[in-house]
Image (cartoon, rainbow, N blue to C red; front, side, top):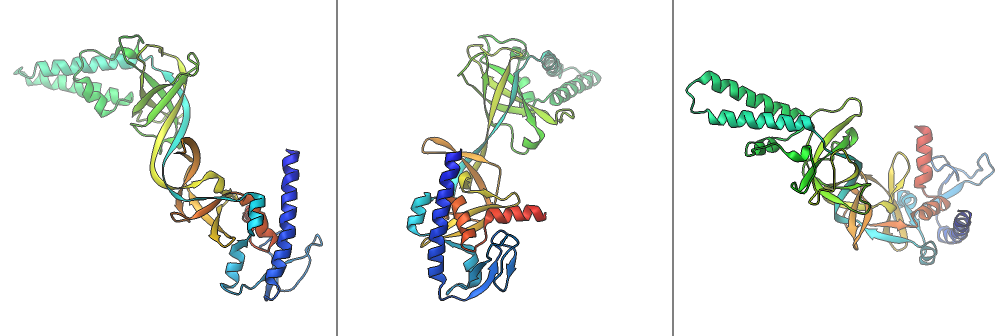
Length: 358
């Protein structure tokens, strides 16, 4: 760590020397608009002065073209300096994104649900069998039993589709009680916490791993979610049908679960491009000719995309950039430091000032 910090200090020192020379040369014949506090860019002075620590205020010059706003927004870095700090950029493009949600799972052992399924199947079959019975009172009672048993299944988390499917069954799902080769699947109950409820839905792909079988993965999908939030854990139980052709997963086993939430195709910003000030998210745009511009962006929750056969982290873009904009992914911290050295607005220092004021 000390070696890394030492190297960083050397690079910054070289940049500051280069910046001081090139900046002074570029601004020699330009008018000074005002002076900026070297430690707090939001503090300015119309005349030269020193701060409380004896450091000189930094002059801000008028640009020959574009005015003072452009002077503040753009950071100029020579090609040799870019090579020194290893500046790399990446285009903002649309990518298929997904979010990974980690949670815990338990292989179902659910006698109550098994019993409720049996009640529904029997009530439905009996109701259908006596439809030709001329006694309407008996028919109404049986129909009420069907409705009541279906409602009980809903409270236990079964979807409308699952309940409809039970109408075609002769027996309840024995995988709720036993796990053997006669059943190709088991049910797993996942814990979905309140803050993830807006992302998770029926149909999402799930992979679980059990401590009993290191290195093995068992796949399935979310079929339904409980309609009621657990007040103690602030979570909802999701029911997942998991492939279990060899009967390895046993009722009451605990497992780790990874939910793959498909976010669709979105404009995506590489995670490395984001400078988080605490109140704002900033990227540096490569606008050409050795110039970089700080740009505030609004982004969604962290996601992943497959690039070059590997999983890489991105943020879905809400606003602030457009397709094919080039954002800095390596060297953006040093570009931000360069902005401060040359009198521009430092995103990170500005962020710390914002937090202090907040």
